Amino acid sequence: MSETTTAAGIEPAAPAVPTKQRLRNLAFLRGLEKKTDESIAQQADALRGVDEDGDEVMPVGTVMPVKLAGRTLATTTMTAGPTTFKIVDERAAIAWMREHNPHHLKEVIRDTWWKTACDAARKSGAALHGKLIDPESGEEITIPGVEVIHGRPTPKTELVKDWEDVIRQAMRSGALTSETLSELLALPAAEAGEER
Image (cartoon, rainbow, N blue to C red; front, side, top):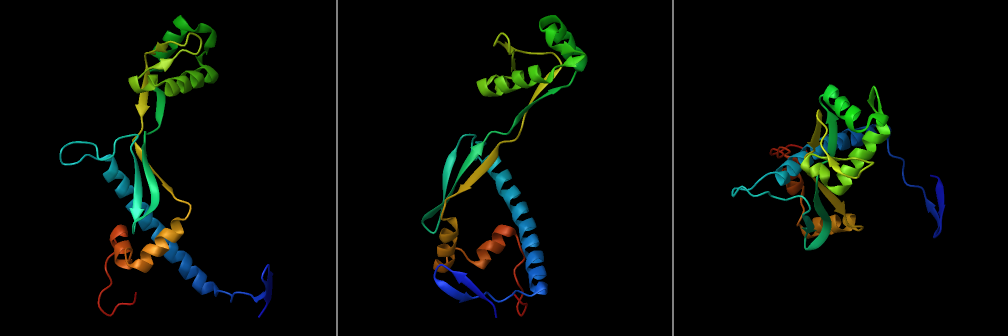
């Protein structure tokens, strides 16, 4: 067995993990990742939804701590979805540009003007009202043929620095069990006599 030199001295190297076991581990983790991604999408959809009274479950801007076994695991913030702008009627948009900003028109609207107008609209909040900001005048503008598209709000979860310790402690205390994980991932329960 080989040795490894560490700050504490010489230690035996960790036993090598057989390739077949690594392949099995990788396949298991990929499957777990797939189920986890599906479960995350379901939870996010539920948080975007409305309750039985018709109120948003988690309105944009809401910040909530996430507790596990009495300790903070993370905070989740409902972020606004991305706002994009799309020219849906290029002829109308070009006609508007020809009349109001012809020096920025070269058969198509110049990318720099477009990007500046969109960025300014996002930053100022004008985009929320379907408006752009004219980079030269600073005024809110509506360009015919341009549609403002608002993305879906997204819950953003930030784990605390010691999240692994929080989960480890929750597992030790019984607050987080394999049954809990199976429920979260919507995995079928093991049947009697079946290997776990």
